[in-house]
Image 1 (tube, helix red, strand yellow):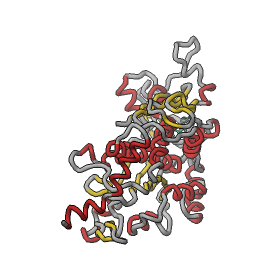
Image 2 (cartoon, helix red, strand yellow):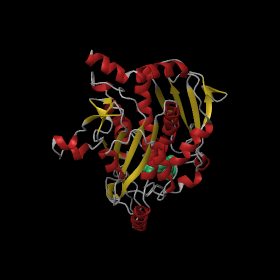
Image 3 (cartoon, helix red, strand yellow):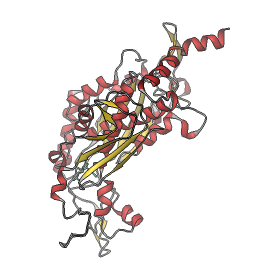
Image 4 (spheres, protein in one colour):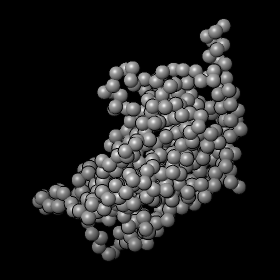
Length: 403
Ligand code: EPS
């Protein structure tokens, strides 16, 4: 089984992550990790912190001469901003007084954190609950992603809406209503989205969204949005229906839901399918050039918790960032009195960056099920297992049913 563990506070010295369980001999470069870390920093509407940081991963172990060793891969991402927080974030006690925060922001982990951990300073909640931690997740997810690419599995995403502004023509509908298996490479989708400052696919849509973000900023407000994350080249047969925790869908939804500020995740046509007739929500099974496939992909590439071989389509909703420059009401824990919430440097919108994080988390879930199915200690062994399985899918069905 693969696993990863991140550590680090938002304004501490660095984030660290250990990734374990991947086979040896697959290529992984620092440049590849840094490309995705950089993508996580992008987007119109982000705050000042992203101007300070240039996130790069230093690989400390697990890779030699550009290839994985099969041993744990550990990585370090320095927080440049730590230089401004040395006293406040000191590991050892300091003689200078550090200001204690007693005013929780609604919507953040400020209050739940102090209740749960018995803190006397909200700073202790803020640090680890910050979305800064997702930089470490992108590093981990990029290891998974690089591995999956060796098998032709590609991942991409785009922003579907910000602040309730949707595109005139929603590409999500084409993904759900067509079978685009062979032609489509999800990474190309990301490359197109990355050109836009809010990671949408259409210029007119971008202009409208930027207008709305400007209004939010002017009013000291924040916005959320929805994202679509796609994986192509995923073979049929990942996941299982035999147990709740073996379903591919279970793992994907958990992974995406774990990202800061995510409040909704659906696979395929999700909530919309609840409003449709069965005949409108399922994907007819057909043969294309002698191969079994589906006419549409409303299931989002998963049936019965198992991948169908069609693109995996995940849609997720991010709530607006909790820190408001024109704050809403809260209670000062030191006085018990009603007061407006504290301002803390933050982003106005982080949906474009969040979409990049969903790519990493989707990669992780797919790699988890991929390695569970195909195993192998080296890339060559995994490739052998993968090829022998995928090559025979159709002939096996014919043999089982037609003899
Ligand atoms: C983030 C770093 C944080 C925030 C943001 C994401 O940095 P700072 O707190 O120093 O400004 O910009 O986190 C939040 C919006 C949040 O609510 O936690 C990052 O690296 O992505």
